[in-house]
Each structure stands twice: as C-alpha cells, then as structure tokens.
Image (cartoon, rainbow, N blue to C red; front, side):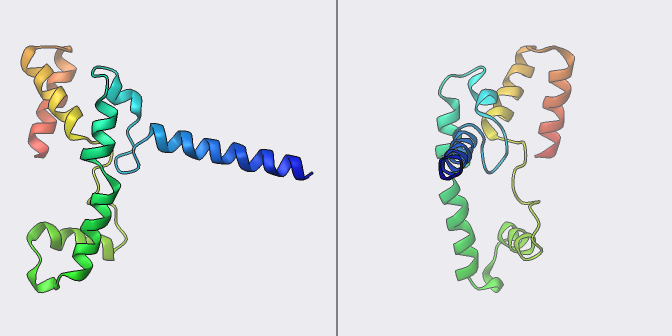
Amino acid sequence: MIIDTFSSLRERANEKRHLMENKCTVCGLTRQEFERNEPGAWRTHYKQEHNLWAYYFFLVHLRTRPPTEYTGLEDFVAECVDAKSLAWLPRHRALALDKRMLADAGRGVGGEGLVQRAGKVAKDR
C-alpha cells in the first residue's frame, strides 16, 4: 500500500516535470514546435520570450504602481487580471514562431496556407 502510494506520487511528479520541460506555461506551445526548424529555439523561448519571472514582476509592478499612472497596456492588463481573464496572455503565439512564419512567407516557403497565416499574423499586430 505504502509502496503504491510512493510510486503514484513519483509518477505524478515525473509527469509534472515532463510537462514543465516540454510545454510553455505562458503560451501553451510545445518544445517540438520550436525545435522543429531551429535547434535551441526552445531554450531561448522559455528563458527570454516567455520568462515566467518577467510576467510575475510585471504583475508586481502593476500592483505597486498607482492606477492613475498606468499606460494603456498596463491598464488593459490590470483590467484583465481583475476580471480573472487570460486575454492579455499570448495563447498559442510566440514571437520567434511568428517571425519565422513571416520570413518563410516572404521566401515563398510553405505554400499558400503559410502565406495566408502570415498575413493574418501581420494583421493582428
């Protein structure tokens, strides 16, 4: 009984560790999506682009700054946080992948579907 419990706990811990090492907490994209075309892109993504500490410090910054001094972006994020909305987070989006998609579209790589998606990315900005 006790051995089964420890085994179950270890298995859950391994699953969590695997998820943390292979899926971005911020955008939800997987390591494979970054490493597919550019080895090492995953490390850059989670260490720089979607660094959890940067998001945390931004939220602390919002809580310590008077709301009357917010910029437009800070005001939007504060409203989302207060409403418990995740609309301010880049879900299934990453700068590295968006830039690569636009560059590929400019070179004609990937066919019409990629060009259409690149156009959508450009319009969203």
